[in-house]
Amino acid sequence: MSIRTSGRSGSTNRFGQVKFIQPVLLAAGVIAGIGLTGSAAAEETPKPGGTLTYLIAADAPPSFDAHRELTFATVYSAAPFYSVLVRVDPNNPASAAEFVCDLCTEMPIPTDDGKTYTFKLRDGVKFHDGSPLTADDVAASWNKIIDPPEGVTSARQSQYMMVDKVEAHDPLTVVFRLKFPTSAFLPALADPFTWIYKKEILDKDPRWHERNILGSGPFKFVGYEVGSAIKGVRNPDYYHPGLPYLDGFIGLYAPKQAVRVDAIRSDRAAIDFRNLPPAARDELVDALGDKITVQQSDLNCGNIFTPNQKRKLFDDARVRRALTLAVDRWSGATALAKIAVVHTVGGIVFPGSPLAASKEELERIAGFWPDIAKSRAEAKRLLKEAGAEGLAFELLNRDLDQPFKYVGTWLVDQWSKIGLNVTQRIVPVGPWFDAMRNGNFDVTLEGNCQSVVNPVLDVQKYLPRSIFTENYGNFEDQHEIDLYQQMLHETDTAKQRQLVRDFEKYVLDDQAHELFVLWQHRIVPHRSYVKDWKISPSFYVNQDLSTVWLDR
Image 1: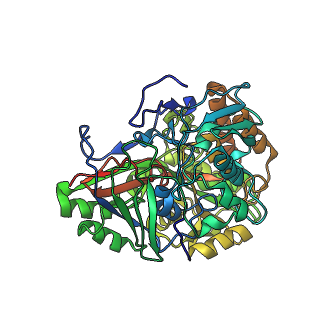
Image 2: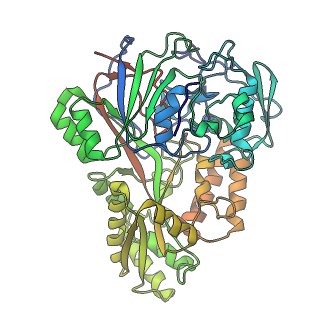
Image 3: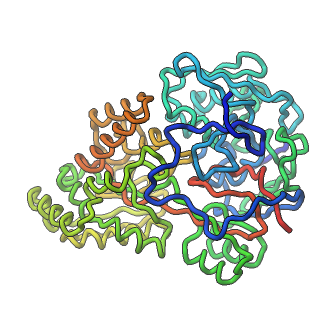
């Protein structure tokens, strides 16, 4: 692999930008909120200088093109080199609801009944090769994401189904025209994978960025050693005055958890941004005391189990419903949280969103009833009625301890409570995907992990495969699709919330197409001298390192 250097009212943040709060995402009524372990520190004056060494829990990224990839390994490797148009506020990423400009000058008020967004760009922004960044580059990058050229993959193309076209009106003006107004657009725009590339390069080779790095972000590329490290240095021409604080960074590739924990304990690295399990957190706290800080958050990533409806008996909604009725999520969450990176009981919508179900609403859905004895009795009745008493089947699971093996083992035990005989087939990630895509399974345990919290788009995983290609339930359901389209097009928050409840009840209870288990939990221990990196409910948000500084 070769790498070549090449108006809206509100309070302002450190960037002097006005915050825009997406109405449908204001955190309220959560079942278990986002939190920070330890006492909140008073505001401190950042110290410039120093090099941050951090860990990347992978041996290498599959490529450096964020438009193509889904993995944290690409973001942790190269996000510091790139700019985006709009992002989650790095000073308050936990809210997942406040969006600020990065390359734009202010958040626009949409016109044309909510269908047109006009962004003015900062003047004088330069790519790291010294060439100017203009609206042509922004439009070209977004068009690659929304409508990639033949032979080029865009991992998020379906997120922008509401976009009609993106145009460069003049060198400092970009216009997004939507097919219909929707509350899902702005959070989709803030996706952290939407890096801005140079149009001249895209025109010559739209796959160039898979193997090369050239951005306009807070750090300039220095070098990359496959399987070892990636390095960057401060960009003196960065367009946010005074940032970044760091002189540079070194990202160390370390796929083994034991190596990462030891590196933090010995201070060879300061932080593993992704996630560590409770035992590793406790080990570091016990060893380092106040030299370690732990940030924790609910994660916009949940485990679900999917029955294969092309298999006999699993094509019966009564059998699928029995599977979810057997699972005691309320007590299971407490027990599993002690050993695994799961924590919160919730429905299909991230529990930090007002579109999420309240506890009372959840308890009316099969699998969330407060009386587990009553729930399991109903499960047994349904199995008998369907002729599926004592059903034996196989749970397909991926070979990953956290949290897959823990959750899978727990599910097998839960199903035994209603007389089912379940065994696990644990396979590496490649064969796991192959089996799901080819329908070679009875029931599979999988995940639904997203970046920016965007409830209406995040639930696409529950749609039939004809609509969302990574659904493996092998079913079609036009009524479900119609419910989703109503959710997507509804702009009134109260009406949209009720539509989400209808969709959730239909998918999890009435038809039991996909069965949600628990929300995952993010645990990030880091050296206490690392300041102003703030956790978010996403592995991918707030990773350009522009606001991070070292207190030493």
